[in-house]
Image (cartoon, rainbow, N blue to C red; front, side):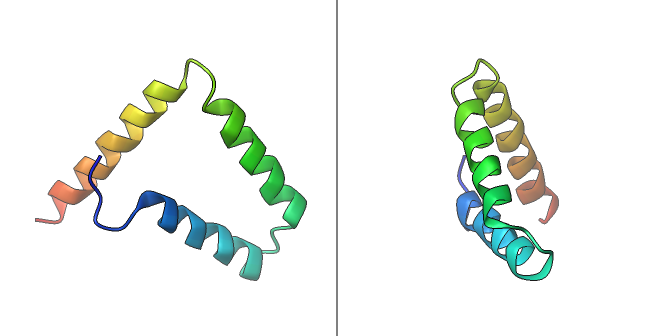
Length: 64
């Protein structure tokens, strides 16, 4: 998946905005982090990767 702006940085910015302006607590963020970590170890991880790659590809081709 080739993205000009890394997807991780975008998700980090979204988390920062949620923390700063939407009242996200530290423990909420930790639970989400643990959920993502454990979800990456399941059989669903490759399908999630393919879905995210397809969405990013669709977004990148729809802008041209």
